Structure formats: structure tokens, C-alpha cells
Length: 511
Image 1 (cartoon, rainbow, N blue to C red):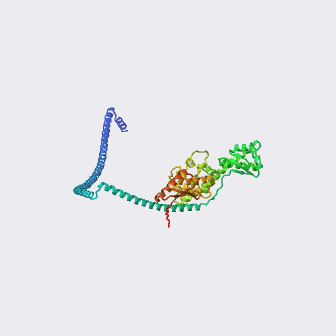
Image 2 (spheres, rainbow, N blue to C red):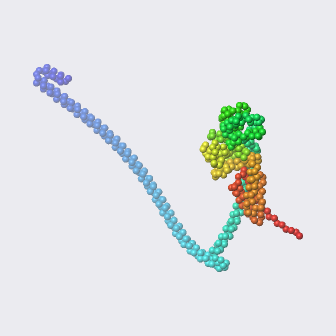
Image 3 (cartoon, helix red, strand yellow):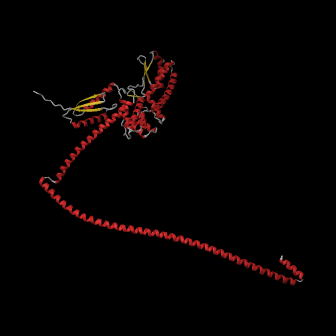
């Protein structure tokens, strides 16, 4: 814009040369002005940058001085701690040195005392040897012989005293244990009421008249053969009036046959097809009744959480008997006895009741086994995840395995109590008489025994011995030997008490 104005002015002034000169002067003036402005601006910017740099430097210097001061402070604190630790260590070192000096002093004193004691000991040994020689010369016995004699006397006196104390302790324990045990057992038996005589599984089917026998046999024996084939029971139709005998080792099959016969005779329609239908329905109904019996038993006894198969086996106990005693009633009674006795002893009554209910579960297996019923029952209980205490009580209640819990002897005792009630079990007369004779003959086999009597239905054995052959101290040993032999060689319900009687008789004649 300025250049245009200048050119215009130069044109007005006339002449190109003048215009050029004028233009150049204008340009030089602008250049000088621009340079001057640029230099001024540069100086200003330079001053601002210098000021900013100086401020930044001062700031950094202040921060550096602050950091140096902080480091100096920390170093001072560290040096103070080091000096304090050094002082502490010096004090401890001084204490240790004092302690070492004291220990050295004590050790020196002990060494001097040890030298003195060794010297005194040697003098005492010499004096002791001299006295021993004098005693040996006076008694004409060597020191070794005197020691042996003294040792024998002391051992004999110690044995006599120990035996006396042991006998007192054992007698006291027997009195207290017997009294407490009798109290618990009597209270338990009194609190659990049961029938003395229990019903046995039936094996005879009663009929109203003998005309029914012909209908049961059927034409050419077809009905009775079909019935035997369907039930697996041997049906004996003989001259016994108004009775048909059912023979089978399995009480459940015998019960199926009895119920089927009852329904067939009541209905009146007896032929092979009808027989198979009735037997099938009866078998199904009996299985349901068995399960229901097991459930009802568990509910009555307040035993919960049993495996369904164990519940079914408990129901099967209703149709099983042992020595004439119904197995289910026996198991229920043992369960109640176990719970009561466990409660009296402060043990778990629920576990004891469960073990008592299941203790004879090995008598009702679905398959026959060669194992004793106690071991078989234990395996069945283990199979269905019963607790180890319950399994051990089942397996050990006839001493087939070792007892590992306090519940096991309780189950064993309660099983004996239930079986030993008067009238609870029945025996064949011949077997009972033979057992009584075996008891008496077993006692008569010992030297010095003159007479033996089995009394109280074989629950006590009284043994009379000769006073000149059996001493008072041997009486208890003889009773123990007889009891051990009875346990090892005989089978009997409950327990047998052995009483050995030694009598000294003196005779004189007045003339």
C-alpha cells in the first residue's frame, strides 16, 4: 500500500529516475524500520527467556536443596540408630564377658571340688573294701553270696506284698464292679418288659374237616404238586386229623404256602392255574407286608436313616425264629435293652439301639452263606454304609472279632439277657440233658474233683474238690480253668457260673 502511494507520488513528480530514487529510499527506510522492530522484539523475547530460565533454575535449585536436606536427615537418623545399636552391643558384650568370667570361676571351683570328692571317694572305697573284708571274715560269706541272699529275700518280700496288694485291689474292683454292673443290668431288665414265651413260626395248617385234604391233593395229585412247585414247600398230607404239615427250611416260603392254602380253601376253587395265581399274589402281598413291618419297627424304635434293604431284612425277621424265640421280637427287645443300658453308662443310646436292632441281621440273608451270622451281618451292615461302631457291635456280639468300641459289649450282654429270660427260648429235651451231662463231665475231668453238679437249668456248676489234693490258693485257679474250658468247648445260652467248694473235715473217735 505504501509502495503504491510512493509510486503514485513519483509519477506525479514526473520522471522515472526520480521515481526510482524515491522508491529506493522508501524501501531502505522500511527495511531499517523492520530490522529495528525485529531486533527490539528479539531483545524482548531474549529477556523473557532469560527470566524464565532463571526462575526454573531457582526452582530446581530449591528442590535439590530440599532433597539434599531430607537425605542428610535420614542419614543422620540412620547414624543415630547405628550408634544406639553399637552401644547396646557393647553393653551386651560387656555382660557376656562378665558372665564368661563368672562361669570360668565356677568351673574352677567345681574342678577343685571334684578333685576333693574323688580323693574322698577313693578313701571311702578303700574304707568300704576294708569293712567288706572284715564282714566276710566274720560271717564266712563272700559279698557276692550275701548280695544274692539279700536279693532273694527282698524279691520274695516284694512278691508277697505285691500279691497282697493286687488281691486287695482286684477284690475291691470286683465288689464295686459287680455291684454297679448288677444294678445297671437289673434296672435295665426291669424297665424293659417283654413276654416270657413268644410264638414260633407255624408249620401246621389246620383245616375244618378231612374232606378238604382230597381237594388239596386233587385228581392224581395235580393240585398238591402244583402247590409244591409254586411255593417250594413240601406239603405232607397224612392221617393227622384236621391238619396238614408244611415242611420247608425257609420260614417265609412256609408262610407263603400257609397263606395261599388258607385263601384257596376259603375260596373253594383249587386247581393248578388258580394255585399259581394265588401264590403269586400272596408272595407279592407278603413282600409288601415285610417292608411295612420293617418300617413300622424302625418307627416304633425311633431308628431312622436305614437303607431300604436293611428295612426289608428287619421285616423278614418276623418269620424267623431262633431256639423257638421270634427273631424280630428278640431284636426289638435287644435294641431297647441296649438303649437303656447305654443311657445308664452315659453312652450314645441311639447308636446302641441301632446296633441292637441289627445285631442278628445275618440270620435273614437273601442268599445262603458259610460265614457265621455275626460276621455275615457285619458285612451286610458295611455294604449299606452303617457306622463302624454299629458294624463292630454286630460282628463281635459272639466274639468272632475283637471288640473296638464300648457299644459292642453292651450288645453282647443284652443279647444274652434277652435269650436267657426264663421261657424265652426252648430246647429239645435230649439236647438240654446232654448239655447238663457235658457240663458235669467236663468238671470231673480235672484232678482232685470228686463231684460236680449242674444246677439252675445248667446256669451254675458246683464243683466239690478233695481238700488234700487242692489247696485254698488253687481253688480260684481251678474255677478259672473250668470256665475257660466251658467257653472254648461248649455252646450255651446266657452264662454259666462256676462255684468250686473245698471242705476240710476232721474226725475223731471218743472211746
